[in-house]
Amino acid sequence: MVKIIIPGELPALNQYSNTERSDRYRAGRLKRNYTAICSVYTKKAMHEGLTVDGKIDIHCHWFVKSKRKDKDNIRFAIKFIQDGMMQAGLIKNDGWSEIGNYYDEFSVDKDNPRVEVEIKEHEES
Image 1 (cartoon, rainbow, N blue to C red):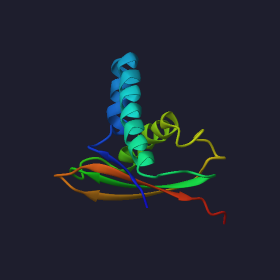
Image 2: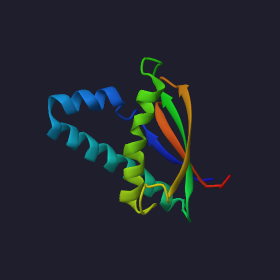
Image 3: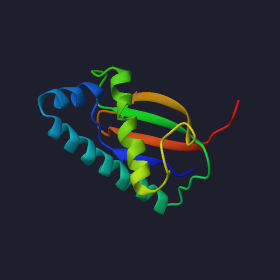
């Protein structure tokens, strides 16, 4: 199973919202930059054999430096990850037809913060 592994922490919702309030152009740059970062690591996973056929479920394991940020704030970064997946060409779109369910797991790793993204075929229930 090939995973997309994105090193470091992605911006949380509060950080993005504060940037948006202070300077919408800077917020746009922030979104473009982190989308591009996610795209690079998606392409790396694709080079290692990650492929998608049909609708998918996304499992994110968020490894953060500390418990200072709320989990819902952290998982906001799924937006950057999905847009990066589209930019890399792994998925065509991030709508209801392409994305099934999301699963999140959270851990603290102060020495190696990262996001590990596992893609699975969506199973209809």
